[in-house]
Image (cartoon, rainbow, N blue to C red; front, side, top):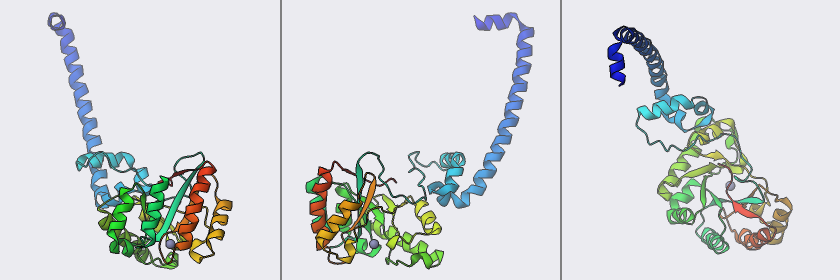
Length: 282
Ligand SMILES: [Zn+2]
């Protein structure tokens, strides 16, 4: 029917054809221009591809280009979302939630005890691992992951003066530890980076975020690493926690009998108070 109509009106068909040809020409011109622009962007973006795709404000600003480059490189579409370099101190979800974070492990004696406790209490936590400890106890790292907890990079040497050191040093502290954790876990995601002693810098946050690790702080610190006694740890934690808190305790770095004993009391108490255990925002 339509073809007949066109057939009966050659003049009209002709003018449409001319218009269509002109349109095609304009489209072609536009495509060429856009194509050229995209090509130029892609070629300049390419050398920094790894950094650009994985994070920071740089990637946030260039989201569109990133997707085109992704298509060009035939990457899987399910890239991890861009990680913020902003330090977080709160749980991923609102409400009466608390994120339990355990630092300085894995430790051959205390980490298994803590994992047993968390398992029996059905509580998930975040483990901030020292790279060489992860390297030394890969089975514990794998167990942490297998039991549904999250991993956090806590550097190689736990240098609490890291914020006064050169950027290449900070970078190797963060990324070498991540490599050790990656190898120990078999490639599980490391969601966070926590600077030793909270010694973050803008550079260390950027480096961590560009490798998918959200800089992670805390809001409740009962100072268990100073061995103040189990009761003091429990009391301080009870005083400091509030909805959304990130609670800092230790399962490594020394004798953690006080921290462990405190946890056996704190977890039931927190549950009684109506707290749900979750992860920090990532
Ligand atoms: Zn630490």
